[in-house]
Length: 184
Image (cartoon, rainbow, N blue to C red; front, top):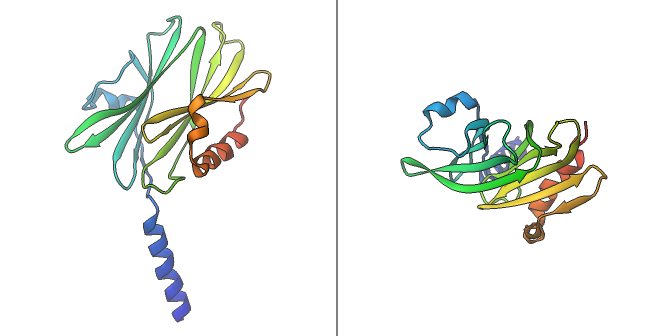
């Protein structure tokens, strides 16, 4: 019995040491009352993700429909004190159409720093939306953006800063990337 109680206490203690990532359901419509202004004329996706050290809202928005080039704004807002501040932003442009894959994303704390590591998937298409040209992974980690890309000929590449990531983060990304159904 003592061993069971000790195992439970040890398990609870170890869980406490790792970041707790909490996702709160949000809809794009919830942004109409947001205490911050996001870029773009239309929000495409929003996620509220809190970790042990902060409250965060990730917003993906785009320019007016039909704009060429198409532009996607990825923004992270963090609650600092009583107000929300823009803490990270990545602007992505493409001569064609950018599609954000709303159900393809992951949140974790792979490096155990008690801060969320967030990854999102988007793709580039031709201007008629007939051909998918690439699939891309955007990692938002410690205020920096990192990108993996696979083109239609199955060639993979990474942003120049990707090699600077710790192995724990690279493993988190690789595991997700390798399992992703990239081509439909």
